[in-house]
Amino acid sequence: MTKSDNHESTGKAPAFFWKNMEKKTKNTIFLVGILLVFSVIGLIVQKLKVSDSGKVVVVTVNGYRTATLDLDHDAEKIIGDKEHGDYNIVQVKDGKARVSEANCSNQVCVLTGEISKEGEIIACLPHGVLVYIEDREEEAP
Image (cartoon, rainbow, N blue to C red; front, side, top):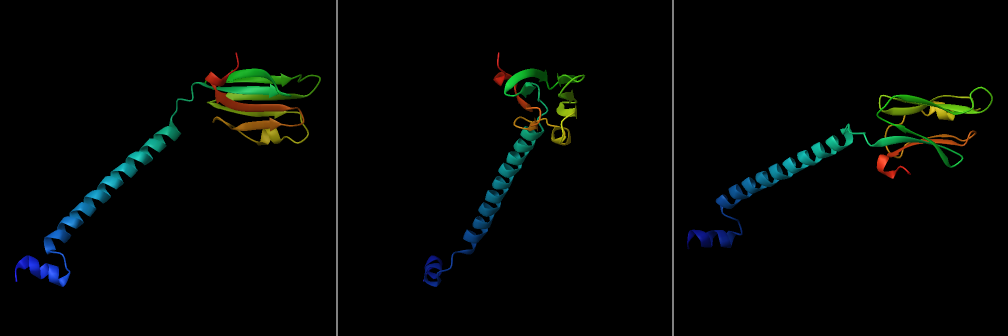
């Protein structure tokens, strides 16, 4: 009976096979780990990407665009008539937009806080005002 016949009859693999299998498994785990690390780093870089340039703050009143403010430049815009009627003050500061003041009854727009990412919205239903962020490319001419 040869050495190889012995392994076949017992159903056990030779010892060198397990050593190689462990090495292959370690290499596979190492490779998968590296891929996961690079994937996570890519996601973090994408999320933390500071290039919010190209984003604008759009203000609409009753569905009509009344103002477009650059998210990269600090600004303040009064929407409505502060002296004699309904008004909201939209403030852009440090790459974030918010309604800093309004004379609506519920103050939900003021309490919403700051927005800075595309898709975030501030709504003042009593005045029909929406404030939201969009890409500059989507901006209407």
